[in-house]
Length: 183
Image (cartoon, rainbow, N blue to C red; front, side, top):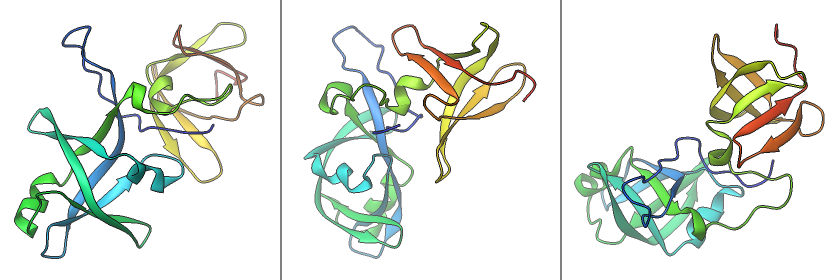
């Protein structure tokens, strides 16, 4: 499926000049006593998150610009020190905050590659046009990504191009799948 950005993406609809924001990671709990935080990347490869000089951090219902002073791998993720974050108490105020970038700051995808953000909200239908639901979120399983659909019931459909996913039209927010409605 290629590059992905998390399905919790927030759109800034305030006015037409506000850029569309895509959530690319999340700040976790404080790490140590010197202002570091755990950080989870939603990008592939994960380390790509740190190639961006500035992040937008969701803080108190608005976006705040933040810069990473240092980062390093830690266990299965990363820890990072944000500029101006001097101790554990300050670091803890960022815990749970989304990390976002303007959509146009992200690389363009190749044919057949999609950001998760582009798939969320799409109507999923069978070859015959039967609607199975709306993509509510995406889930990474290791083997392949999975679309989580809401509708008359929740469905989990693997995102396997050409086998299960036959067509994706991001402009029309429509995905055609080879999937039996009873599954």
